[in-house]
Amino acid sequence: MYEQRRFERRDSYEPPFDPQRDRIKKILDGDARELNRYAEEKAKHLAAGRDTERLSTSQIRNILDELHRMSKFDEARLQMMRPRLAYAAGRHKGKVKDMQAILDIAIEMTGSANFQNLKNLVEAIVAYHRYHGGK
Image 1 (tube, rainbow, N blue to C red):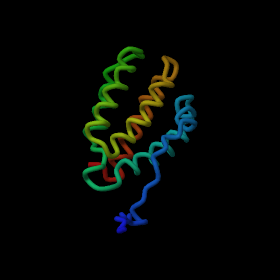
Image 2: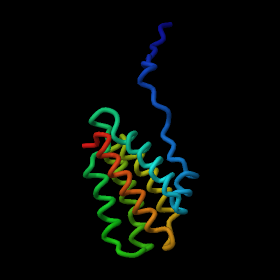
Image 3: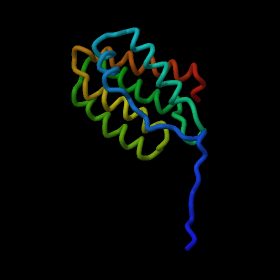
Image 4: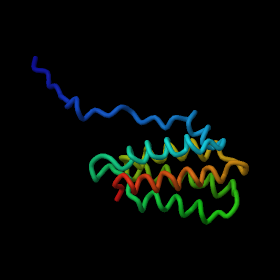
């Protein structure tokens, strides 16, 4: 009996995205050097790939703008970002889903004491994303 096989190109394989919870925790605890390393690494990943799967600057800017509108920590508004991010990830697929994974973990770990560190993380990802060719 004839078996239909699908072959995938080995050079196009990309391992599953890992947001690295332990690194996010260090960043939210105030490790600025880790913030820079992590933000550049993840932004480079988010800016890479085909146009249909890349994260756009406007998508990531919307998140940062929402955080900047919160002058102080607001638990309800911050937690409401999680379903909005999930909706965007389901709608756009690709790297939006990876950004959602990062922010979902970060928002889960954020309180009033480290809210500014969350803002810094998102701002750094936006900046490095643009630097690495994010459109």
